[in-house]
Length: 290
Image (cartoon, rainbow, N blue to C red; front, side, top):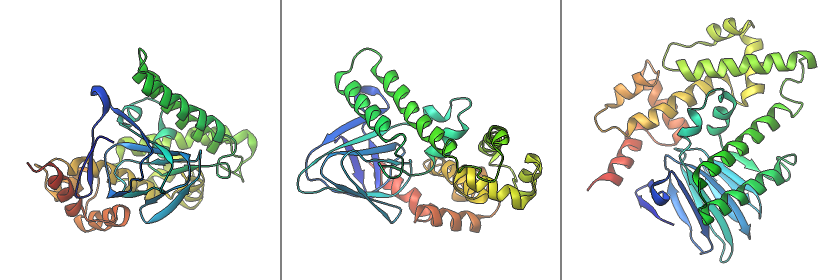
């Protein structure tokens, strides 16, 4: 696979001046701990493969799909024989779409799609991955656009499956479900647009018209993470990009990402990324040193 790995930062060698790279990997290759700015999707075609993502181990059977967000430290392990699809793409295009709040929450978290975890969409997701593979290998006219349309469809299926699961707001009457979904989509959109500001739980809860205790419970049900964890994750995602700029000091990165305290920034960053901001910056500097 055309990658460049030095230290733990991987620079993805996208194909044909595109922002896509798909590799049918049938060699017994293990990839040591690394990270990259691309979103990665792995699907075994033959045999069982393993992935360690942020110290969590995933065992992938044939047809299982693991989506790895950008910037996450992970390792890939291979059996002595087998085949897997390794697909990497620049997800910033999806982040620029309007009305994509639900997609953003998906892009920020790892997702494992199996018969057990997502029985309603498992086969559809498999088919879309197969179509992405065929489009990539055949390179028909508009193949890159077609692949991004299929990527978007994959994430829409995940988002709708989460919303339609019947457990999103279990204590809310059916007639109120749509209203609550729209309300929390707007909350997510507000956070994504204003994460650099002084956003507090009290302020957001009041904006949504709930007590902070009720809001916290509903937000957790909607986003599958707490309000402050989501806010911190959004800020750290911004910091990852800023840390790649050699002209920005760590303190400036923290401020531009919405952290008012460098100590808080360091603590949250290490908690989420398993390394300090300085170590993260050095990883990239090492890779790009001539």
